[in-house]
Length: 315
Image 1 (tube, helix red, strand yellow):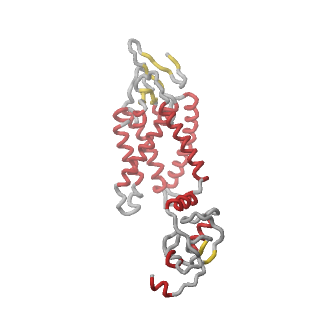
Image 2 (cartoon, helix red, strand yellow):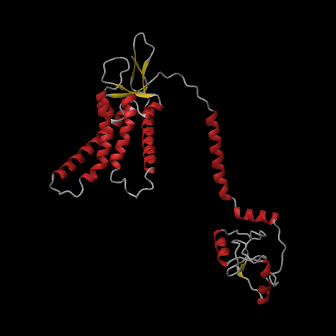
Image 3 (tube, helix red, strand yellow):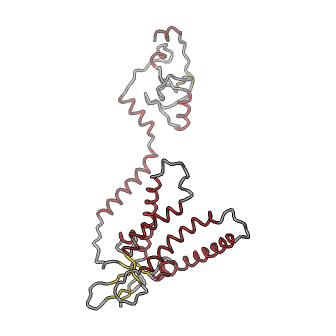
């Protein structure tokens, strides 16, 4: 008999090279997380089939539907393979720990049925019990049953916490159901020495470092000013005086929104802005610059022009 760092023993049979290897604590917990993620995925795919139905139509039967889906998963995992989906991905399966045989023994039929009752039945009872005991008289048998179930659930949670602390110390039976049923997780095949490659890890570290650098750098860049500077280089415009009457024909649109200027204002350059556009941009960016000529904002003032109606009629 050999003892490993997980708190379990590895049994070898005479004349056989196979060994029952106990599972590390982190592997057992990872298997539970994978199973939980699979259940959520199956439930989300199932509810999408009813997304075009009347809202709330499945709410009343939700505990029963979840129990039915979990029962189907149990039928094709625990009942047929003595391992959940998460355990199969990690090469883990359950062993009948009550058996006196030295080699691997599958879960018997009673353990499989009791496993379904302890896991699926418990979840169904917790989700359905609030609806079973609502609107019942306080002196009825239903109220006493609700009180008893509440006490049992409290004791079960306390026992589960104690069992988990024992699991962290000894590495066996992470759940109370496994300890009660006498089933233990073991590796389905012997594990050899793993060749660890760091090429993928180095690539991930490099990418995460580069992403963090960009996240730190981007807020320091004034994108609006940079954009206006580039626009002034590639799309230069000829200047003109504000007092010129042709300004009304040359600046028929706001330099920010592209529409006809509402309450036209200027910032010291030869371009026109809507009052609300330039005011909102100047409040959000204290270093705001004109997107047409890249002139920094000096002062927001209304546009004063002497324009005759004939200018508009000609346009």
